[in-house]
Length: 212
Image (cartoon, rainbow, N blue to C red; front, side, top):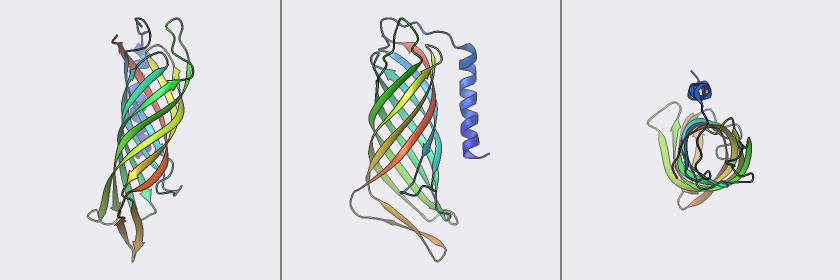
């Protein structure tokens, strides 16, 4: 089963019981303290500046909302992508984001669409591997800041879907990949470099409790 097929299957299996059994969440005073968990599908629109090397993956997150306008997301992503036809790369993201809703949550009525801007930070581990020789690889750690836009769509007070796009700027050692005599060659450059990419996320969240 392809990675994309597995991602779609996981999303459907996660969403189905919540759609069927979802009941409205009792909000105490405002949306501050609402905790939710979810899954997400992610697409890294280019790797190392090459549009053909799209990375696709999945992940999860939990949200802790601070007020009617401010929410936080804590996430993990696993992304696979190609490097030409001779190598591949695997990326792991673990980080957090702060979202500011342009349309705030309301205790009086269900707000369907909630567009937001976001900013945050994450740590990243990347592994480059030769397609023909698993022992030929290179790896790096980096740190990134990100900013972007998105929107939640609330099916109910408990269940929501979101779509967001963010630009991530990674600070770390750069790895150059090339093919020489039919073999992948990876060169880790000295010093610290900046590298950016666009990350698109489509996810589902289920609110489990209002803690305060």
